[in-house]
Length: 313
Image 1 (tube, rainbow, N blue to C red):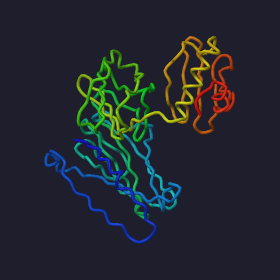
Image 2: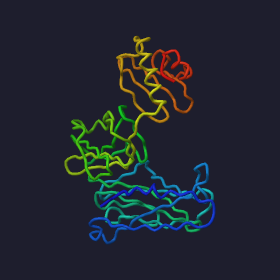
Image 3: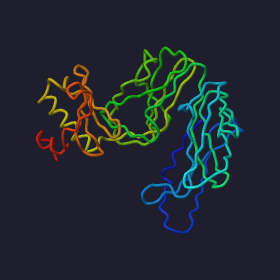
Image 4: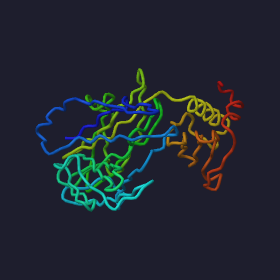
């Protein structure tokens, strides 16, 4: 069993003194997993959002966050703003995967678990989520945890493929996994991705999740948010629409779906193999494709193009 619980509402601003938190609740069927433990990680941040004190970061040596039943996954821990002579390792769901004191994770049965490493000297804690699959399976990669996707845009839902999986069904939940609805039937799961047009909801949600179901198993994404497009995105779409009308030899077909890949918001025109993008980092418009020698070229300020295109301020 694996359950994500959103406790973002417990964020507090503390200037001095002490803060006491009391957490209570009940998880269905918890008594069936007597060796499992809930993990709560609390981080202190400064006014700029940087972690205070020592922190521990965990990475897998092969760059993957999943393992097949019966295989191993090696993790490495690194301490910042401090020094640790070693780490105490633990798994929140030992029925799914165990970890030894060298950071080697052993996959036991399908599911998800959180691996924790606590610095022996600093006491700082790092966590790493691991998904265990069968000998064949799919592991959702995108959308990633805490990502925001925007109504009406097209995003790439991607997954890793282990072994041989022919097809899968893709489901969406907008209430933290309580209810799911089918959004696509994936005929070729080996492709590893699906272009999903995000539906428009009555209001934003911060506990959406996707689930891939295939013969013999399934994979659920971390929680992510769905929200209305920002002014930046609306302005970008207006400029993109203007570019399609003004320069159809480059940007066709018209009204190609926009995609978000932070910090870029872009459209890809298959017939001409050209990307037209706006960056939320510098608010500039960029073009990449054969006419630019397949190099990303900054063509000017988004606000300047918006003025020419007659986009609303």
